[in-house]
Image (cartoon, rainbow, N blue to C red; front, side, top):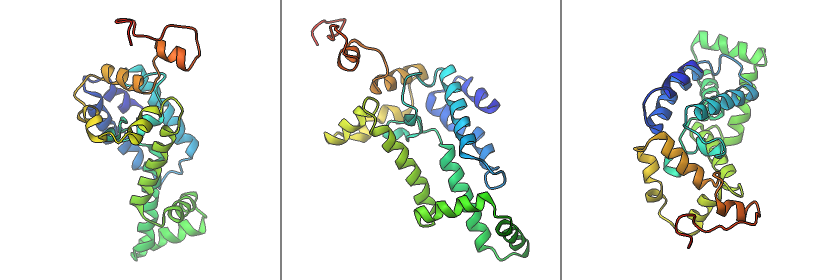
Length: 222
């Protein structure tokens, strides 16, 4: 958390901050995967703390969608690395390495892992069975599930659903987000608006069913 706080306190664009978090903060955790038996609840707790820090430092809107954060930037997300995905990939690679190597010391480690009924080993076996032992497929599978959770949400997923259905150029639509040239405060406001997380007159009338005029407050016509 200390490294995360240091990165977020710097004068960088949101895109550069997300990349720095992946390089400087998440890397420390990845080195422990396969050695420390992390539980999913612990990883989820770290996610919540990370999102709180993002919000405190103006990099995430309080009412914006949380799955949106872990979607790649070229697909309208923030591109933050998902710890569950990183953990799954690392322990799968770790177990594959143990299974392939014939070095005597590695064999001792492999024997110990099997005899101790390691939780890491059991988790890796389950994950490999799920995605046919391919690390790349595993990472893509988790990313696709996250994106799907976002898309199926009634309010937050309306924009991506509309873009998919109306044959819109996705690459050009999200080009501004992928380039990451605007300030973090501006970016989170636009993303929150796309998630319908900002309380507008239109939102109050359509979603909250309030008796209110939904036309533009400026021109009063649309």
